[in-house]
Image 1: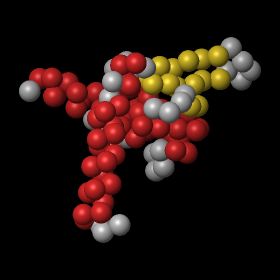
Image 2: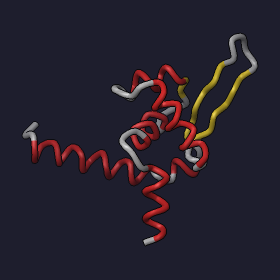
Image 3: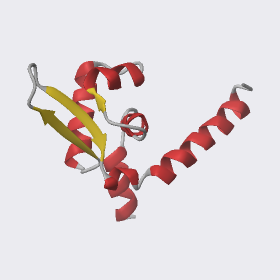
Image 4: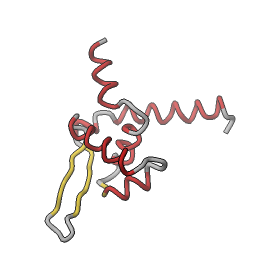
Length: 102
């Protein structure tokens, strides 16, 4: 049970899996993520990115430009959730058809 608790704490909440899914294709800047993860506020996105970074699921790269460019990317540890994200995606499609009928 401890391992499941650890896993849930790392990806808990409404947004973390959506952020990881958005980053699974390629690195993105903050505003790109905010657009892709519709409905999230900038404050919440910032908090969730910090948490994902602490759990080593994403990496934050700052480039020496003016103004500084910050880019977020998924780490190899974060990519290890790929099967979970894919299965959740397919389950969500089936669930949507079952419940909503679309």
